[in-house]
Length: 402
DNA sequence: TTACATGATTTTAG
DNA sequence: CTAAAATCATGTAA
Image (cartoon, rainbow, N blue to C red; front, side):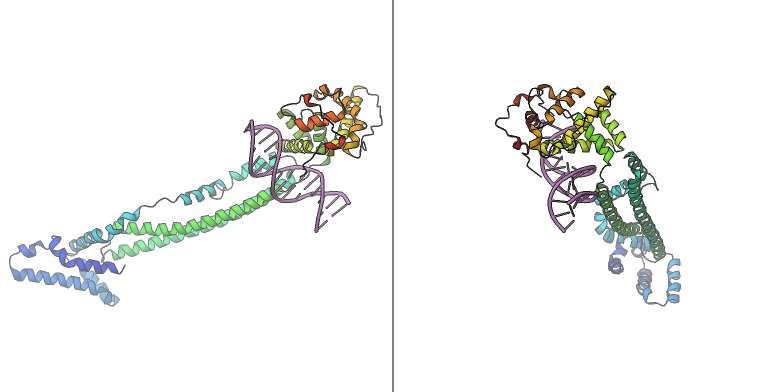
């Protein structure tokens, strides 16, 4: 700031000749007249230079005097012009703002998280809908959600308050500077263009502060979000009944445990969980069953027997109560294979009309195990590889463990 | 506290 | 996209 006057003044001598202001000084003919004008000009400049040294009243008076001088507008224009050519052209090149991509990123994120968007709607509503859709067990879920929403709205409130404060401060400061510059532009060569430039600089400064605010807000949201996600990851076991239903379906469709979309929906409904959870459950069940069939045999027997009993009861109302013997069918997979359940499985699957054991009816249970273990369900259910040579029952736990 | 069970998520393959 | 496989992170029984 303080170098502008220097530059201005240092150009002053050339200016007179250059800018045509006092042209008549030379044309005017008589030297005394020209000398007088020169002197007058020098006086004016001297006054400008010393104006800051004056006391306020004195300066005010001189300012007034200067303002009223007939040469003032022309001189002012010249000063502005010179200044424009020298000072401003230097920094004129680096004016353009790069439109910071990071700022845009932050803005987008804040908008997406519903912090800077419309007041209370958008994401919250969608999230609420999702929460509501995620099963009847809404209590826990919605509690977490409302917690999240409360925290989010807290962040949003802080954000808006701060933003408003910044905005206000920026406006105040801008107005102040503008007034100051306008005021000074009466005595200093300050063009409107320069004022505008100054305002831009101020705005940029403030928006960089705002960016910091946005950044920290984003961080806060991210932290909150990750916490919420972690919370959401908190596992809650399904209730007993749901597990029963799922297991029942799984073991009664053991040959092809891939419930259709409709079946999943139905199961989801019955178990009060989401379809996605049903899918998760079946995904986990399939892989874990396949990985260690032995471990699941007992469970398989139990559900198979239950299904059989149910089917029997349904078909012949005779309440057979045929001593299911299932709960303790076999202590281990090995004993299971050779002991009782072969028949049980056959009968059960036969009752269910399941295609699985088509090729297995003739084979023993052991082969069934090996087929299932090797093949998996997806591609090759054909038990042509029933061979299972020399494979004792012990080979069942060919698990690679976890 | 540990080991295992289990729902959910991420990675990988088709 | 779906499903398998791997992995995570918690719930729970011992």
